[in-house]
Image (cartoon, rainbow, N blue to C red; front, side, top):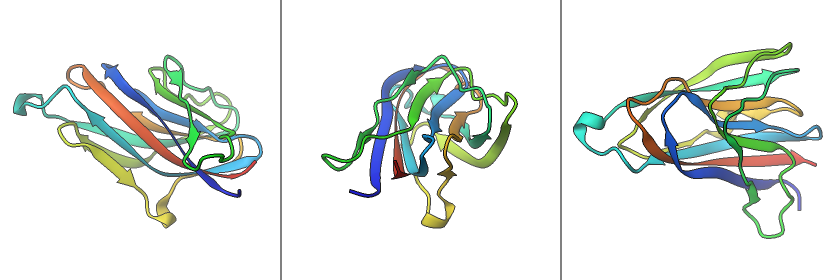
Length: 162
């Protein structure tokens, strides 16, 4: 069936600390393209609770240490009968991706999220993050929100190869 787009995510997670919202690792025999992501929260709506959270994208190559404290997401093909996703997507890792003996490139991109407004971020084809075999990519929430926010998120991926 060729290249297949996949989605994975989390729902109703109380976020109180900085974390990797998404950590994606490509398998040894595929490339993963990140098409975009969406985030929204459903607990803070008043003017006094409004805040803009800092998100950054990061890349890990070689021997890096995967984040921890979160969970592995279920990743599903968008097309019935599509190829199973060969990589790994972790969500809400409260210990973020670390350098190890590999290379960690932080702050590839800076994205602001006003928590009162759902964030739907799609990259143009030329700007999409490309994760090479065995490499990592993260969407990091750099600092804790002012108070707990119950959040939902989806990531949109394309797997090439496998």
